[in-house]
Image (tube, rainbow, N blue to C red; front, side, top):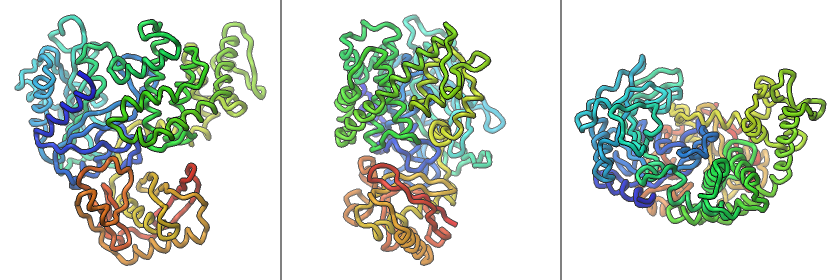
Length: 603
């Protein structure tokens, strides 16, 4: 079975069970400021999980592209990926555990023809926040799953988001595992046995966790499921890893051709490097298709790190010429049929990869010098210094301050120095490292890593007011600056608005005041915020603004604020402008080439 065949089978099955097929969303979250990238199919659906009506109905199904970097150090093994595709189906206050589990079982055993003896499941073991999920276990038993093949596990394993640490909609889940061993599957399921591979997860969203940490029962109970496309195809075809699925394997073939080898010729270490290059550049290509540029902050920081890691692994394989654009061409060829944005942004993707790879050549040579110096210090006692800071600390561990000075003096990326430390099996003076990089971390690495811990948007009334204010601000910007202004991205929390828009020049103080006055004038008028559902063509005909058009379905929600603003959007929103308070722009600055950024608040 190919990935294309599994996608079609999945979508068709759930469509036949009353689910509307909806497009996947952008990799850049619109309604969730707690994460840098869309990590699961549910992220774009947060407003609807909290009770807003979805234009397509209560039963939905789609394929969602996702980015996760929490396991970036595991990439290169058999199963971990940074970019992956997630098959998902949802019930927004419609069916719950009984129907969800039955449909999962039917798809696995009848559509995919998986023998019952190759399946096992896990359920939530219960704690002070939520009871043991015997209901799910009993449904599985009624379908023929042996009690010995059902394990109860804690929040870290059977709750989404994992551990329940973040606010937002969440609840217990039940996960399905496939036996990949060549021998007969054991009668009793052991969660620690790595031959059992997770392929599907049904999440039962019963709660909304408040910012204060309180679990409140949701009025609308939802089902959110996720099946990893590559992983499922791999196990169904008896493959040893996700890198043997057809699209990833073709990317692997392109990389190995650059070193005149085949995948079968590679050593274990070379295999890991090739897989990491394939993974990182596939992820980078998809991020670039969202018009994100490499930088030192947030999404751009992650993008830069992925590209530079891939280039370094290429160097270790003996690739001395610029090559990232060649790999990207294969990614676009393999995935461009389903993801039109890859084809549309091809020139941008190729140019950005080439530019970043060229820019990295000098710092890359310093990474190898750092490795040479570090090995010399450990093996021969030859200790190099930068600005009188030695490469090793007094305890014999790697100096965190030296890594910082290496970055300051030569532009050597800290994360690649840390990779070298790990590869050599050494330890770093963590306290010294954290102290030295405190300022740097606040703007780049820590900001990214904190957001990748997961979680869902703050969907409070305050955030809804902020969201509504962005509609007024965009309309005001277009009136003051011109019709060339479009939204390029936003990040909204309960404390502030961050809004990126297309414009070349720095705004003058007079223009900023004009925008503020226009927004506050609409707020004072106490205008109702009206939501209408209509076709995308009808919305365009009415002049509604929209972003990331490839993500919209046949029906959309259009929010109108009098004659001042009309936008396609998912929410959440205030009921009228009078709820917003006083709008104030705190800062206007450059975001990237041709894009400006505004930071604003409601007082």
